Length: 174
Length: 241
Image (tube, rainbow over all chains, first blue to last red; front, side, top):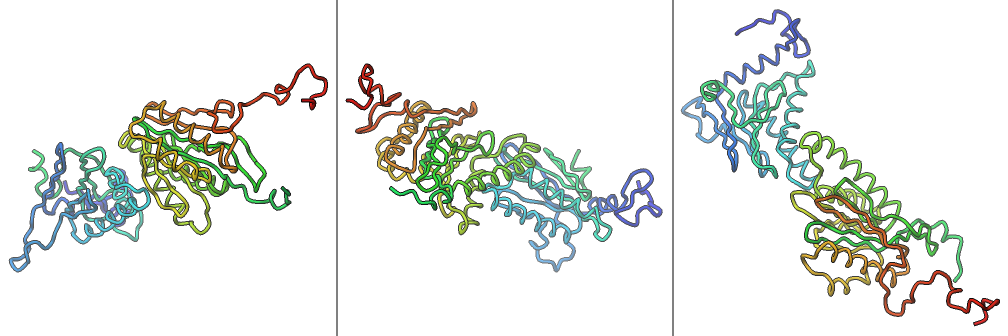
């Protein structure tokens, strides 16, 4: 379903006549074309997996990490533009440590997801910023047990039992 | 004793005795009710146990102004946090630990300006009843029981002897009332009535113990309605004993 914006897709601050923001949809395409990332919530924890894309035989295995730990009990797997992903992970880490230093308890996963989603959404509001070209699967364990969230480039975040993003997501979901 | 004019302009201090005690299922907070400016008792029925949230209360001691301001700020921050983070999203009140942490951040970061020692106590569904002491300087310490204020000096030995783990609600309330009344008897800066607040899974209950219901200590007299009762009522000259 390739739709051409013809003029309404030049800026993230422009709506099309049928109410879409094309730039955000294009950002989502960047995620769809990248390596698959899967997350599953289990009774006693979260499991996340990423498809390892080996760009060249000269690359050291173990570099190009796409799963990052955010705090003692939360982690994030990134699909899409890797550099954008690094930015989101850094932000999530600082939100988590800041929350703990103010409130004295580890950040609840729901709150962390909310903060990351707000940050991603922020970059869809200004013409001088571009949306993040990556989707994130955030998993964590807090007082209410294990929880899994997915945050898309549009800034939407939902809670899931199982989630997949990237090239192989349709196959993963069946 | 000469009452100097400076005493009336002295900052309101709460001399005070404050106590927080955990029991099997919740906490009991207790305090006296005297607020003094120098030797003048500005308020003999003050309420030193203030509410931070539905399930967390704070005992205040030291400077009345400082402790009121800290509690107002913490209540505000907690409502911001609870209503935006917990209640709207998770639908539940904040924990005692979070409330206590906010109190100690204010206390520590403004230690050069504040002079107030506080006891944070409450009940939440994750940890049950908890007491956190936040004395001068802004340290935070979780304790099975905590005492504070000028009257607490007289209670250290008392608690060493009378405190035990796993008390019932009634035992804990009796212990708190006994302790506050002992401190009132011995400390000139504590007095008035005893107020207690009991917090558990069922909610919060406030109690009030006027002077004549408090246990008497060594050499204390029975309370009288009037000194005239001590004398011969038939006598026309009251001073003629």
